[in-house]
Amino acid sequence: YWVPILLILAFYLLTHNPTDTEKKLEKKPDKKQDKFILYDYEVVKTFPHDPAAFTQGLFFDQGFLYEGTGLYGSSNLRKVDLETGKVLQISHLDKSLFGEGIVLWDKNDTIVQITWQEHIGFIYDRKTFEILGNFSLSTEGWGITSDGNHLILRDGSDKLYFLDPINFKIVKRLYVKSKGKPVHRINEMEYVDGIIYANIWLTHEIVMIDPRSGRVKGLINLKNILVPHSGDVLNGIAYDSKGKRFFVTGKNWPKLFQVEFVATDI
Image (tube, rainbow, N blue to C red; front, side, top):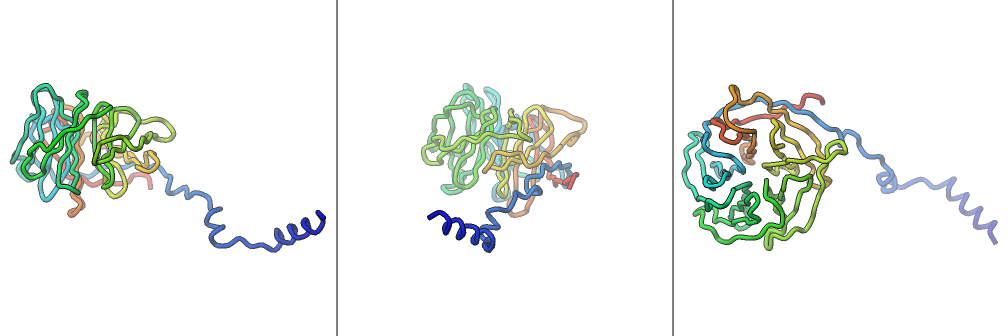
């Protein structure tokens, strides 16, 4: 009984050629795709920035910067003219609240702003800055961005929280690692072309995070971008999707920079 079966199996193994689909499934991972890349920067242009703004959130939309600031008694949401740094529109948070990250939710033309330890976030009309509602946070609020389907929140730990944009409930947690080690103190974030660019608090570095795996794919060194240094730490990343421009600034910095990132180890 077993002899015919063994002969058939042997014939199959000797004559069978894997299909293209099977070859793809057997293909080893592309090491180039997993490569960790270091970047330097070039300053393209410098703009004025309000040195009284303790920058916690930043994004660019339709020709204007939108900025969220922190500190108790000084937290606000503002619309800023890029060229002059002039504040065109502003909404103040209550003195009991410490403002943190902001993000545009363009599916209903609103801006979301979170707070640090107060476990509350606010929803604004983008045009009027009228507060349309608020929501509860189960974690501290640090940075926030969006991939177009979810809001993505940071709380200072090594986790990304993906929130449902309707009820603001956590639907997914993702651990961030660089070369296998947890990455903490991620602050202000910007989602650009499938990558999360994020400031690391108390450093001059921006990490590039894959939002599918949590793996850090690259690191941008912005050391000495503000010389002489005045103000607090680097914090604030914005991207102009039409002009393909990156902007960076910091807490209480007098300048905002348009920058290009240059790979140093390809």
